[in-house]
Length: 500
Image (cartoon, rainbow, N blue to C red; front, side, top):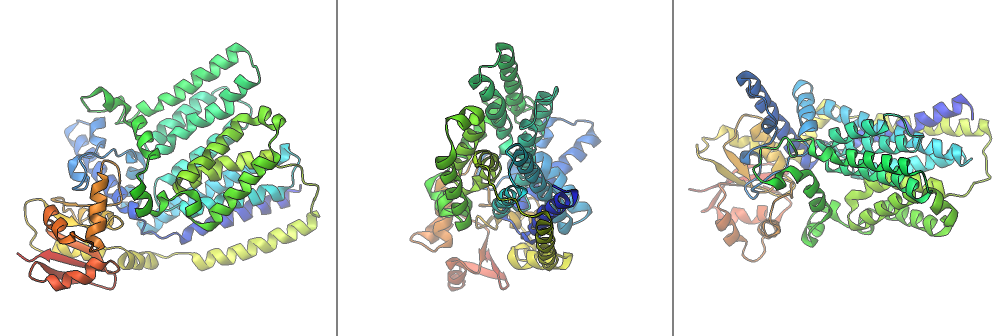
């Protein structure tokens, strides 16, 4: 394979990855991530002034959570600091640039993994391209401007590292990666999981020396202890023994999703209930597993195929795990493919890659965002203007409550918190941890104007109601002017204040 072919192949993957630019900035989670970053930045600045910096400064208090929660495990705190500083010093567009770079690095890492395996398997570079494009496509469908993208890059790099001969300091490198990721996203657990599959299982199944088995088990234990290096681990300010294990208990909670939430939140749907291309890729991988895996490949790559199969199971449970499937199944899929005899002519391959890259370039140019477009999207698709309207009112000094939808509560919170208003809470804001399922049912009942909705509003007793124009509640409240007064309305959102 010529250097030109290799360069064009990398270029094709890079250009394809730039399609992340078209992902909207108005993800429901982005706003409360920025709010968390602003709060923690303020706490650190205050602590420096008082010469009292401690890990407890990084843990948001009750005021940061919404009014239906009694606890919030802010395991994203480290990347939230980075996100807020990028936004504060540059803006939303630069935040998109930051995450686009992360996404591109992830896709290039996946292609490098695929390329290395195809070389070992004497496969065509086309296999590596097709596999990496499929993986990036799955990643793109569940990716947005939020911390999970960092975990995709780190998990991909972990795979890349573990597919090579073991480095002398491999355990330390993975331990440090896990420490960083444990303070960024719950997917940190896949680093020790991959070490178990890619290093420990082969030593156990291939009858390696006891010393090597013991060494790998000790390294696995070390990497698994990374969950304690966190404000929710050994640096916790909690009083209970269980507080030291929060990063581990969170994993169990993350894997268990209530049936109602699976209907209520799209990303919690099972893999075959989600987007069709995801289902097709799942079936293709499953067919390859059944068709091509034999005793020889199982004995040689048991850990790799186990990781791929588990990622497929997780995807069946929830489409949010399609990112994990995209990375782990990539390795397994290429490993089990039989050699393909077709080898395209080098000149023809170069011509095809050049043509493909030109078409990708045109597509990217059409999708490049500007600061004006990002600002317009935020104004149009988030309740920022509606909630900012509250800042101009004579707000009560006591803590007030805004009834919000799951999708828009975070943006409402951020719109006011960014302006320095802190004496308020929203009812729901995109976070599920610690919130009783009954509260989601109540919110669903209120905004859908289902039986008993008015009684539920009276029980929750909000001071303001934010409603997107697409929900039934927005069309019903104008008939209750004696109770709720409209103070703002635009094409997307309406804000109501208690009449008294």
